[in-house]
Image (cartoon, rainbow, N blue to C red; front, side, top):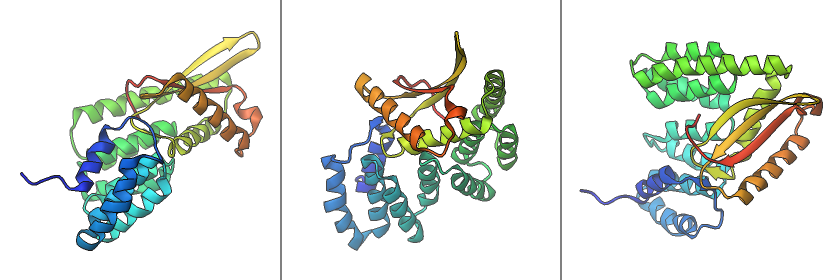
Length: 256
């Protein structure tokens, strides 16, 4: 059995990480300051992959993307898929979808790529994108088949909620993108977005719940305040999102 490379070690750590990013993590700085310079002379592809993983865990997605793009230029086999995932986490869904489609054109059985396309369809509340994703996919994985049908039902249910509350669909799509952009430098791990509606004496409102892992109550409140600032500073019209409440909590049951 061959010993794990530093890039493999970092990948396993990243896969198992659930929680807030840590820009001051000693492990990540050691990767960047000791292991990456050493690898650049012997295995530059692994050096850039390791650099990318460190930056993801430190909450620096732009630097992580740049490092992984360098690994791709050097011929790393998994870099393209990693770039697809980084773009997705940054809310750059169009670019991520394009890479997923290119991967599926070369390998129509690529589960991660079709799953990502389905996730983008749900985030954009677009049933046509579900059908398009399944046209790219040529496999027969039952979980993918079930997910595509479940997402069609979810999209229809969410659109019904928006119609009932008279909330513009495009506003909600923009808010979902803002959530990803907001979390990209603050959190790494699985998360789950859910819709609900409630009513008060002055009317109905939409609840978008963001369930995350390993967060304290203070962490959630901090994210709540931070995201409200994002909305206030955004180009969105307050009249469009005044009846939308985005909440953060620590409880993950599934992810998209």
